[in-house]
Amino acid sequence: MDRRHHAFNKKGDSWNCLLLLFFLLIFTVVSINIFLYVYLDQMYQPSKYSQVDPSMCLQGHFRMGRMKDCSSWLSCESIGKEVRKLKLVGEGAVKKVFLAEWKEMKVAFSQLTQLELLDDFVHGLRMLQSLQSRHVVTLLGFCEKDHTILTEYHPLGSLKDLDKTFALPRYKSLNTWQTRFRLAIDYVGIINYLHNSPLGVLVMCDSNDLNKVLSQFLLTSDFQVIANDLDALPAVDKDKGILVKCGHREITGDFVAPEQLWPHGPGVEFSDDLMPPYDEKTDIWKIPAVTDYLLGHVTGSDIVRFHLFDIHSECGKQNPLERPSAQTVLETYRRVFTLLMKDMAVSETREML
Image (cartoon, rainbow, N blue to C red; front, side, top):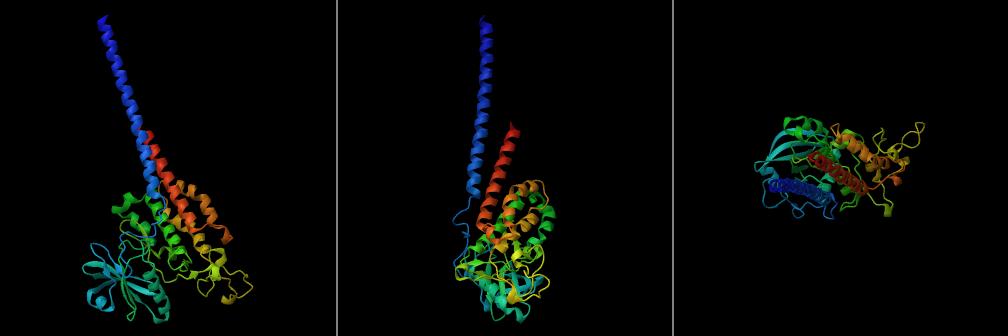
């Protein structure tokens, strides 16, 4: 009798241990999920300081790479003495870009191609000076009399080369919907910054086709997107009735917003005087096409597209007044990213069970 009672107690103790372990496992899983929810909410919530890079220096100064202290923008004399051009790495309508070296660090040396485009070159320099933030390439110096600009060099190049970058063996593991979606969030964050910039509402005019848009942005070594080419950023001031026109020639194609197309039909010859101006909502129209490119065709990208369908439909409204602001698009992107990350965490937790 005592033996049976003792055996029963041992069996009961075993069940109690199993139950305790089960409840501990449940508690651990719940705790992990709560932590993930809180962490992701905090990590991807918009911050009132989101426009400012905490590592930025005071206006007129910069810091990059291994530099511990901020340095003032390099002058004509410093650029002439301390910067060594290495090779041509890019050329556009306004400027040539050379890989160069300054104090054993790689930098980008930009030079005006033709004097007829000096106004665009100077405008781009003024934008770089005024818009220094985590959204814009770091300005290192300039020489107006020589028509040169020095900026931080990013070896991964522009977003045009994104698929080539992901095809490299060292970056293949990063070719996921999470990485690609973060790039899209960065891109929309830049548009939002330009629409709410210290200089007012700025419109990205150098954006008549997808490749042209992609060439305006650089991919950093830690896979963030920054604006690089700021040569065509006119300002909108609706209170003063100031709208913009992106150039003085007719714009065509499906990529540009409807209001950028000639509205008077093929029977009327194009005239800049008859072309109505427009506002920053042209940038909103282009967001879905750019994001579609950035998402690529990796596993999970179609699920992201599904969740972005509604906001992208809003971006594609024919009437620009009905399109959302860049801030609304950015908040939606962040919310969708957080939701998908939470869903993935829950799914992985279920698999553990």
